[in-house]
Length: 177
Image 1: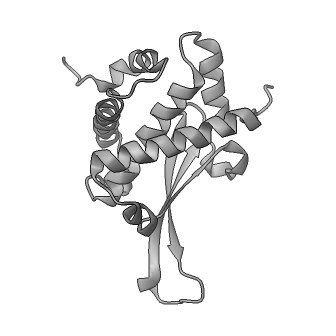
Image 2: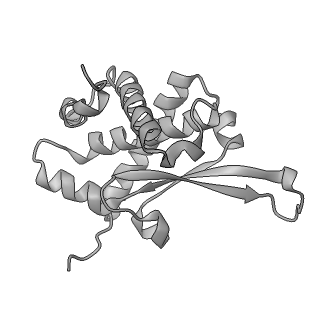
């Protein structure tokens, strides 16, 4: 049985840098203010901080929606949505190690930008989180989010990003093209 692997300290620093860049790029693309992000809460966690149901095999990350409540306020009107971006360290590390053309930094940037595009679309009511389990809607949404991610990142000059674009190319294509 293979040991469950986590990002080391150096990789976590790279995640932090990718998060900052992805946030800025998504904010600029969707014209969101910093206050919009703070008001509509989200969090990004790596595998060591995930609970069992947030760990999945296959995807490199997933968004999980929770309902939060303000402390000491029992009214339902004080509730809010909290989106948790759950990075899957073992899957990310495995593909970067197996695919010599993929570098960790641009791969993390793509993954985080992609997941924040999902969050932005949920917050802007462009896609309902509840549809996430409906297979046909999910595939259509995934392809749309990959195309948006590409649109956001195509102007960024980072070594290794073109290899990441190639890795995800089939996800940007509309079926039948």
